[in-house]
Image (cartoon, rainbow, N blue to C red; front, side, top):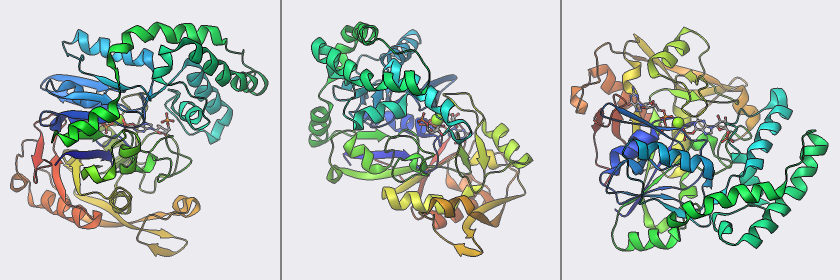
Length: 427
Ligand code: GDP
Ligand code: IMO
Ligand code: MG
């Protein structure tokens, strides 16, 4: 069981941080392969709560080596503030490895993210404003700055000038902003070089060697399947590939080495930012899910939009990721509803549609078709085995499993590490 991927099956915030942390004690490496500090992963260990943005959740497990792969975009200021915060709390972060090929989020990428959103007005994506999209755009446009560029000043100067040449035209002429001086950017970036140096490595080589030696490598996705730039609800997506294939391109580990792909699936649905959301609840049930589930963004503090479970989304996640298992989270949040609606299919233009439509227009028009499942009122947060759950909670899980197309191998009944029912081992 050398390499496994753990990723979000919905629109992010499914509980990936908790799931990764849970496995962290038994794996040798935890690797972030895409995204950046747009992620907000919460880990609760005992009475301590950690919010991780850029660092892999495995950083909290002493035996585990955390890795930031080539597919990640790294804001060095955020990296050091996160490392400092953990060090102050006694967490040893010295094992961290960062790919020299990872791209850097520069201050101008953050500026472009913010002004673009402002310029889009009511058509905005609702990004986290962390410079994610513009940094990936620079990467694809071949004007990105990589971690390794910090160690060749003349190349760094040339690359920053090239990136700003074009951007300054846009900033000044289109957005009416002051041009950004390349010298200042280079100066700022170079201040990070020495401190970053001990972490920088050829992570592709390290990870492939580790897998060949039988070490266990866990890839931790940021965001979720429906925020994937290829497979998500484009254009209301992030600018990378959280889906399983992204683990390969974002780390340099081939698909033949990956044996298990675990989808983290919330027992209901949430979304942050703009875009379609068929089961969204704008009533007191939505408000109750938000309140009981604590559905407030870890990164931006925005309220999360909440809705019922959507089975076509789960099936879609199984399909595009080749999921082998689900980890169903936050089942405890549904305690207390007499009946729980679950979306089993959509009605689109008067027709019943079983699968997530590929057409953006159809998805915007999709109305959920609900099946009502009986609820439960017993406290389930102390449940340790599937049999400890009340019958209706068991039936809810079984129904979701049946609809979603992969076995539910673990169930979250609370935010803490131990508040988990393990049905099948992941390792
Ligand atoms: P991530 O981005 O996928 O890591 O998820 P977030 O950390 O953004 O949001 C998930 C939230 O749910 C966090 O506050 C977790 O502590 C919490 N959480 C995770 N699993 C469970 C669970 O099974 N039950 C409850 N009540 N909370 C959970
Ligand atoms: P985790 O890893 C939920 C959303 C933003 C916005 C869209 C694009 O905690 O699940 P971006 O800044 O990435 O260009 O924003 O993606 N988004 C997330 N939503 N959880 C996340 O991460 C997210 N990261 C980005 O709200 O709609
Ligand atoms: Mg999150």
